[in-house]
Image (cartoon, rainbow, N blue to C red; front, side, top):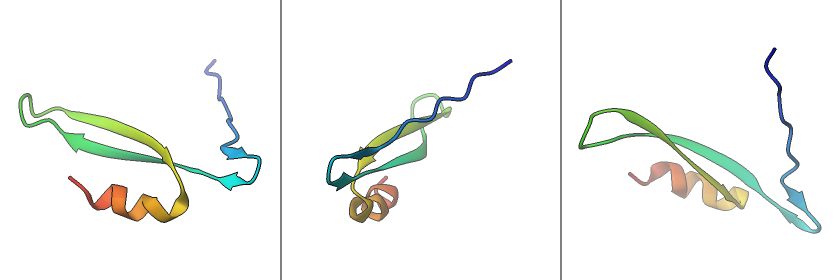
Length: 50
């Protein structure tokens, strides 16, 4: 049976979001996932970048 981990990303007064983006590797052609924890205002910019 798989375990599900729930993590709180809220620290004291800051509110954070976790963004996950799928990126294709130019060398092998395989897809990898890039994760980052940031403020909600920065998420759109992170997802737009290649």
